[in-house]
Length: 348
Ligand SMILES: Cc1cc2nc3c(=O)[nH]c(=O)nc-3n(C[C@H](O)[C@H](O)[C@H](O)COP(=O)(O)OP(=O)(O)OC[C@H]3O[C@@H](n4cnc5c(N)ncnc54)[C@H](O)[C@@H]3O)c2cc1C
Image (cartoon, rainbow, N blue to C red; front, side, top):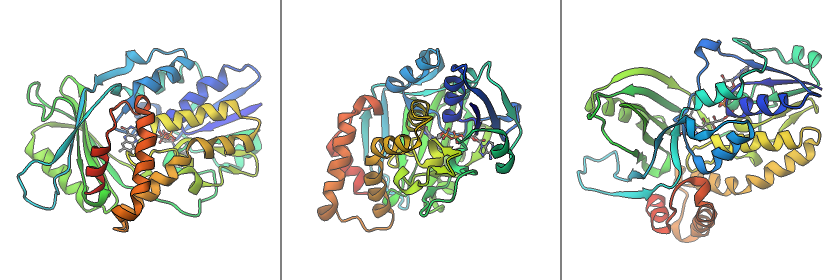
């Protein structure tokens, strides 16, 4: 079986490792960035409780990639449009949420596999040369038909360095934007380094908030990146296949938890489902839709908040459903989930 894996992010790297282990396969990877510029544009936060097993499937020890183990995450709920100096925040206890070296894990997963960097292959040449083409291009989704309904949040992010003892926070920090249109994040990377960034549907608030933060807390800017994150769930991202030759995986088919914009675990899970169902696309489709069914409820909730259509009394059952899901899977999210926090967040 000749397989092309196009796009070497979390999903593509996992597939390169797992599919290359099967000697009946001849697997070739393609990544548009040159090897020296290959990056993992992301804030690098995840739950080690899940990632440890996924890394183990590739013979890797996830503990070796952890840069910061979160204990608490402060979520500031103060309205950024007012000069209000009062306090309004929640403090979330973290149990397994970490910031890890995502790029190093990707590089270690692809060690010993064959990848052409700096190349965006044409669809027709892939179709001529390979039996299966996997679209793991994330947001880009270059090799699949456009879905009917797209929804994505534009993001910017800086990697910065503070003088030691002058970091703004010593643990994870979020600042929620009005109507849940996005949030600002500060995630420590250890040794004074941090990822700071923001995603904002409205595009108005994020740039200004990040720029002001950079001025307020002096730091050295190492890198600036921008990329949208797709939050429309798998149900809205069909088709997952094209003419039975191309199959999508990861963010290209919407595996991002919309409440958090969190795609590392769901995209790696999705890659794992594809490994198990490589020769049964219909079962793959069914499993993906089932596994990520709740993402549609979460997405509808976020969208109704953003468009000011959320009615607390009428729609509170949606909130309850999301709470029940996250409460049941506290380990997977790496945090303590409380109804009171959910209600406070839903009111911004
Ligand atoms: C700013 C930001 C911060 C985020 N922070 C977090 C976080 O802290 N935690 C979390 O869980 N999720 C986070 N996410 C979401 C998460 O990064 C993604 O959902 C996840 O990485 C998706 O994995 P993937 O492998 O499907 O795609 P990606 O990781 O996006 O990988 C796609 C790869 O394909 C390559 N590519 C694209 N087009 C082509 C092409 N035509 N040919 C060849 N190569 C191509 C890209 O260069 C890239 O390497 C964040 C997203 C953004 C934008």
